[in-house]
Amino acid sequence: MADETQVDRIREAFHYQSRFKGSTMVFKIDFPVTEEPSFPHLVRDLALLARTGFRVVIVPGAKEWIDAVLTEYGIHSNYAGTTRITAGAAMPFVEMAAFHVATRFMTGLSADRVDAVTGNFVRARGLGVVNGLDMEHTGKVDKIFIDSLGRILNLGMVPILPCIGWSPTGKSYNVPSNEIALSVSIALGAVKLFIISAQGGIRTGAYALPDGIAIGEHGQVIRLSPPEAEALLAANAAAAGRDDKALTELDLALRASRAGVERVHIIDGRERGAILRELFSNLGVGTMVYADEYESIRTLKTSDIPDVLRLMEPLMQQGILIRRGIEDIRGKQDDYAVFEIDGSIHACGALHNWEGGQGEIAAIATDPAYTDMGLGSRIVRFLIDEAREKGLHRVFVLTTRTHDWFEFLGFKECSAESLPEQRRKQYDLKRKSKVFALELR
Ligand SMILES: CC(C)(COP(=O)(O)OP(=O)(O)OC[C@H]1O[C@@H](n2cnc3c(N)ncnc32)[C@H](O)[C@@H]1OP(=O)(O)O)[C@@H](O)C(=O)NCCC(=O)NCCS
Image 1 (cartoon, rainbow, N blue to C red):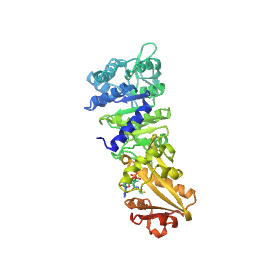
Image 2: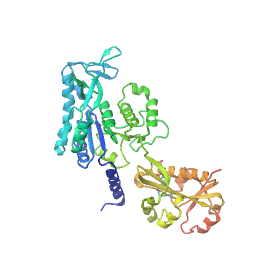
Image 3: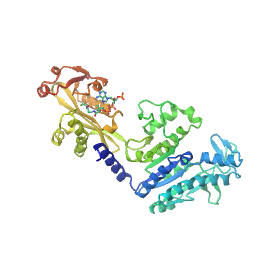
Image 4: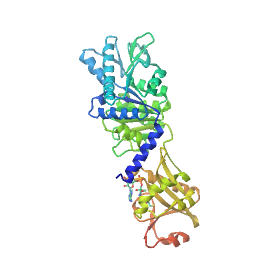
């Protein structure tokens, strides 16, 4: 039988499923991922999404495979900075390589019986002469044919856009897949863009990180708002100039989110189930750049009470929190604050007013799947700020097992005698709670 935590995760998956069903999601998937043992699993997950009503668009990156094919045929490429100048003689080989990679997706989707179409959905034009260099067959996106793409998506089919575009006169151009992914995401109003490569997101250690950025247990930057992503790129501008792949991906993510794509996820395509974890939970494995409201601490609404009780129930059963029912919470509803992530509640806490300018911090609980991410301490800080705004001079907490944590947050142990008189009268001698307090003045 599934335990409560599993049930919570299933619930969370349903929440995301109903929220995103029918939405367009663009998957920019870089070449080396197609060669990884995890690739069939990744395509199976894409097929699953397409079959369950998500509108899936695939943009395969083929740079390294194009390099390999050109080398194989002895064709040398010149570069303008980091951009390949695709010569006329190279173009047939570039097309061959780009379509080869696209076919890898067709093959995988066929195995899962999902219809896919590789097509001429990109109108391109040449870059022309840049700084005295003729860019020849290197092009940029001129237009995305959204009507044809829309018709294909409406049929439940998956369009695949290789890194080739065609001019109205029938000339073909090599167009960077990042630019196609960006343009198609904007043109189709995609709610999500996934950037999937063989590295996945920004990791600590390699980059200078702005303060206050959330770091995951695998050392990855979990999420960035556009200003944070911009600050990170600025702090690592020297590496960005050296064509650092992770920073290039972050730059693409930032441009997409600035253009209105709500969420951009940069993930490691070698990790099995990475897409589903990113999509159906808040416990993703990559770096997300988000342009919409993602998380907030706010006061409790009546409709939140069942969620808050569900968070507290196991802790009440273990005797860590004192028992409260719906009526107890409803009676003091304004005292409670909740930590909402993407529409679901994952932590809560309360500040009860007592006489003599004292406030009690209570009912602090974090969803076990979301611990050690700073939710608990942010709720406590929120309540402390609230206490200050109310003009309280002291907050205290009664705790049996979490005194170390409160001490870490700056609380000091004190005697039960220091409690407000009314609260002292309710002090449960059998519980033997320790009293910790924080002076606010
Ligand atoms: C205590 C609790 C609220 C912390 O929530 P959280 O969201 O994980 O908190 P944060 O992410 O802000 O802090 C996590 C840090 O506190 C530490 N911590 C967690 N519980 C602790 C405890 N009981 N004692 C000491 N430290 C603790 C973690 O190890 C972690 O340390 P790290 O940052 O060095 O890795 C959560 O574990 C919980 O719900 N506990 C049960 C309910 C409870 O005890 N409530 C308080 C009584 S009102």
